[in-house]
Length: 105
Ligand SMILES: [Zn+2]
Picture 1 (cartoon, rainbow, N blue to C red):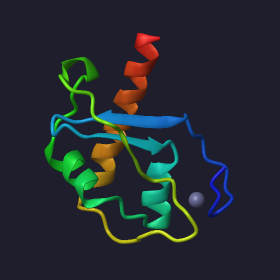
Picture 2 (tube, rainbow, N blue to C red):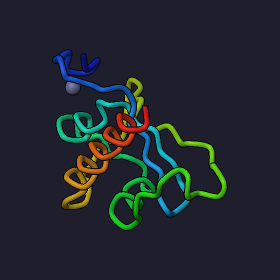
Picture 3 (cartoon, rainbow, N blue to C red):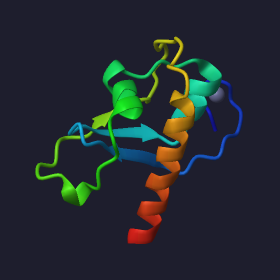
Picture 4 (spheres, rainbow, N blue to C red):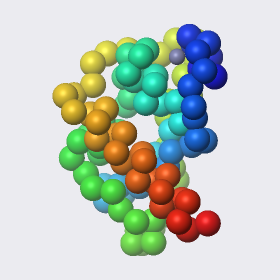
């Protein structure tokens, strides 16, 4: 259930994405809905990673950095336009991340 529009959206927990940039991000499963339907503008570094960095396997990262949690929107949040193709890229990265989680368990 989305707390903003009170519509039911299927959400599969959290999405964890680790990039070769060295950053790990944790997003709520509803993050894609927040971007697509509420215009939520994610942090600049996150958009940069999605557009320009590659997904890294957690095992290949020598140092495990502290994940950055984003997308747990409060009463107000930044809205704006994401770069062209951003949502599609994030969507496919998120679905791969889910698959990995499923396979490793
Ligand atoms: Zn909503």
